[in-house]
Image (cartoon, rainbow, N blue to C red; front, side, top):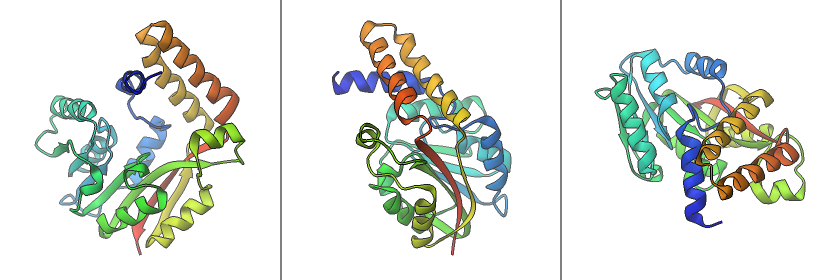
Length: 236
């Protein structure tokens, strides 16, 4: 498989997803409620926003404006189209650039599954702390190990912290935790299934072989081993 093949499969998979992470509607609504800013004049920032769904929901729910930063131009175009369809173009701006270069703080900062922008979770949390205004909130979500991984899973995902270690990293970066949770197995099952639907729609033998390998890797490998943590934080 070439890098271009993988890029095509990933684009097809993400195109049909509401969120490119194991995030169900109940959790999305709960996070939106918990992330309510202190006033309507606040501004949100989503770094590595993908198609921008979570940012737009936060802005809609709380009557605020926001910026989404995404290096993938296709995802950025999709986000701008969705914002226009929902009448948010005047309040939410999407920037097609590398989020690691963003320097303007916000009252509500979001980074979901994109710690790689800065390197690892610890580096990401340090960067997010610098971008979260005093008294504001940050939502950081990233992969963790729920149980000790075998060699194959460790080779796939590398060195991930567990939930306690990730929370300690947030405190070390200067945050205080307000809410700590992780995606359920049902959220993971839905995400993996929905992710593969886009690949299945390509319909070619190589695409189906890729889908089969991904499905097998999940069901016989990282299902229940790799988790996804959700931390709502505030600067200390």
